[in-house]
Amino acid sequence: MWATAGDGFEFASVLSQRILDPSVQNMRALGQARAQEARAAAAVLGVPADHTFMLGYPDGGLFSLFTTAYDERYVSPHSGAGAVCVNGALERLSVALPGKSAQSTPLPPAPTCISLAPLGCKRFISFTSNAREADLNRVLDSVQPDLVLAPAPQDVHPDHLTLSSLAVRLLSARQQAGELRFWVVHGGLEWPLPKGLHPSLSLTLPPLTATLFWTRVDLTAQQVGRKVRAIDVYRSQTRVMSRFLHSFVRANELLSLEAQPTATAPHPAFYRPLTSH
Image 1 (spheres, rainbow, N blue to C red):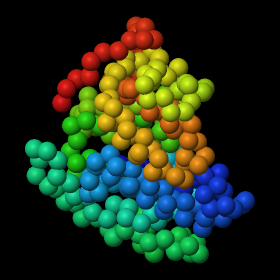
Image 2 (tube, one colour):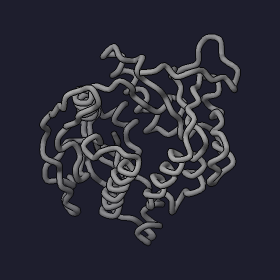
Image 3 (spheres, helix red, strand yellow):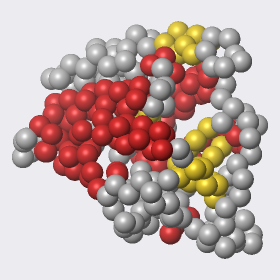
């Protein structure tokens, strides 16, 4: 599931579209392109299209939705949109997982972006925290997950931090907080090191979250290769930050079972086995 379409990264628009001053139409086009890249990357990883869900909320705006725009519509300063206008966003939730029968929850038709319209979409879901939480709950109702991977609250990206808080609150309300596992992308200055593609090296603990209990998940050579191919699909991002993205291609993944450190902080190199599901 993707909460945003990545339509707020202006430097990516500058490089990919070869323009100096991206307009709101350029940023919306970037969002459409990045949504397509995300779906293509999921396919590389073997995730069927009907197991993926694009919410399409504003890139860089999730914290504002969380704090000041619960019922009041938020307008993205990057795309100028005040509503979801990513093609294919939550048309229908339908998924069949191993051991479960397929479930389908009809949703409004996918909104179509109108580049020059003030609101940006013909048929839209306004950018509000209330709407976003309703969409997240629809995904959870449809999928009924056994395991939920979410950003750790120590991740310094404001969208990641917001999604972490939402995941903890929504899963706790469902009595499913124990199914959460946390990951980090922005975990400290210059982390991970060294930059670039080093698939034989281990992914070390992020400095900002070194006191959490971490699980090391080792990857096979085939899994590492597939991860590289999935990252390379994100052309709009690898043009800008290839060395950073490829620095996550390592011999292992890191997941934490807790969002916050325990009273007695573990040694920074502490790992423990992942609870099986």
